Length: 284
Image (cartoon, rainbow, N blue to C red; front, side):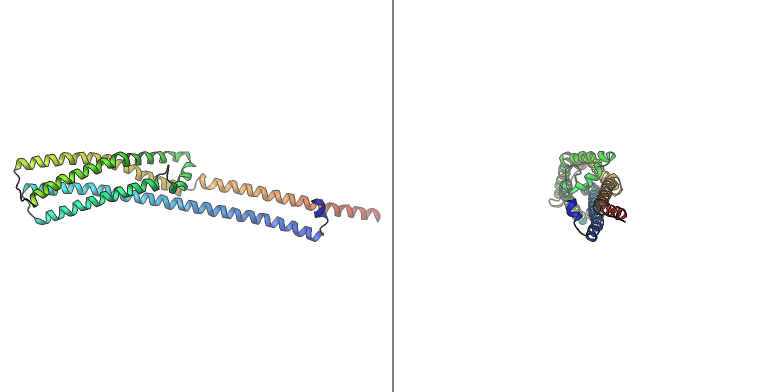
């Protein structure tokens, strides 16, 4: 190989040497730039995903709180109707609207909960792979993954099914009382009113207890989403280490190629010229 290179004219040899020295760093710079852009794009996707998770979790927490508040309002409406003191027809219409609103919110939360668990679970979702890699690069963020998974499992398998069932039971009981007043025109005695109120409130009390557990667990999901967002937006080891390592490796190979090129030039050009100059001096 060296003999073949030695037979090439000096100008071509120098041109090839300079071309190699210029081309190798250029290729390395292009590869580094591509790697950096890929990392930047992945980090941007992770930030966007974490913001989406935080937004959805926060909105559904508001949805849960509103849902439970409407249930309390529905209970108060029916109780007022049972007493016979308030006979405004608008009260019945308002009650029907509130009941429909609660059912709509319940359906919405159930659907979003399924989608959230599938798309935003840090431990298992493919959609969260970039976020998961960033979190796992720092050991202090490991608790976010396990805490979110525990909270989501509690909500999906225990607390939401329990609360939604109790909420439906409360709505059915209240609707039965409402229908008796509106459709049958029944007038309840104070003893009957107290009994109906006690029965309805007993179920409502259970629903409120279930709601407290549900809200606390979902608050954990919201808090984990906030912590996840802070961790992802921070520039940590997950972003800096790959770039530093790749830059170091690239610099090493550039120096190696420069040294190798210099060695070949010295072996095929400099030494023969030095030998030729020495021979010329001896002849002279």
